[in-house]
Image (cartoon, rainbow, N blue to C red; front, side, top):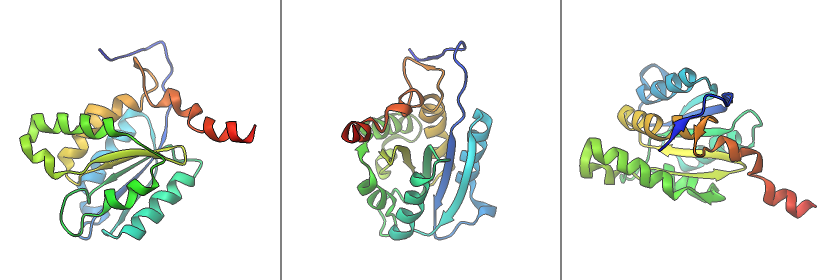
Length: 182
């Protein structure tokens, strides 16, 4: 099973958080607050945090800008993953993915199922890689954000996590680009 290797030094990542909502502001963004607190408690740096409405173009523009910023290693979005007409976050972001992370959705739904049963099917949580930046697209509820962070992200974003983690492969995410140049 997984464990932390205390002989390895923790590596802090730069993380940006985007809340997608037509009705929330920073004052009442509980899901963004959950993610911000957990990011900081883990020792990572919250590089930026924003709230934008359920608008595909604005979602893409914000996330793309973060993936191009040297200070951002990870983008986490919350909100807009359901099935209503306004829920467009996965539809907006999946075309940006150079590589999809199907395992994230599978593990997220397994964790979520243990807490909310078949209602987990109402989320289109997804993840992928764009511009050597990990992107995680979470539902908008604080509980879903807790489940994703506590059950997946805190481990995979920790270099000390064994047997493997995302941090240790980060230096190799662009090797396909380097091969083309050389």
